[in-house]
Image 1: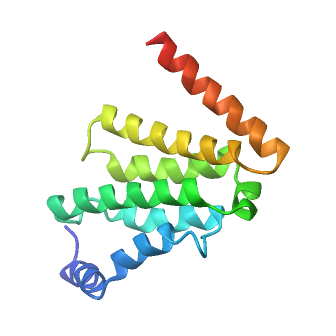
Image 2: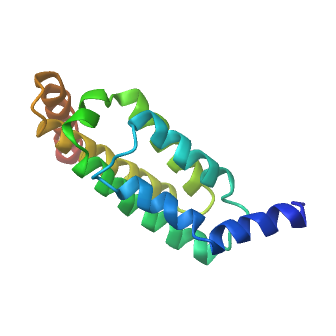
Length: 149
């Protein structure tokens, strides 16, 4: 049902490296994307999920998840200071939408938990008391969940 013109533009954007530049921009810890802008980078690609070739899309999601792991584990202190549960939840909501209908619920939940743990770990290593407390609380939450299993 999508127009030929839309599909042609998506293919062209991919051929000129547009989707690759999204991955690079997210994973570039030397010049990090503000957390609030991370949501805006994930959302447009998530909205195109049903237009991609399935094989390409699954590889792209894997690369995006790896880029997000790098982003969350290597973000500088200035970014850690501004991060909060809402901004992380919004980016993970878009990632969930992107993965929905293409990956199992278990895989989606595992991916989101892995990224939340990466955020908590980075917060725990921050020089700010409040961020450390948030990180420690989240790590304790994941420990409690794993002990219940």
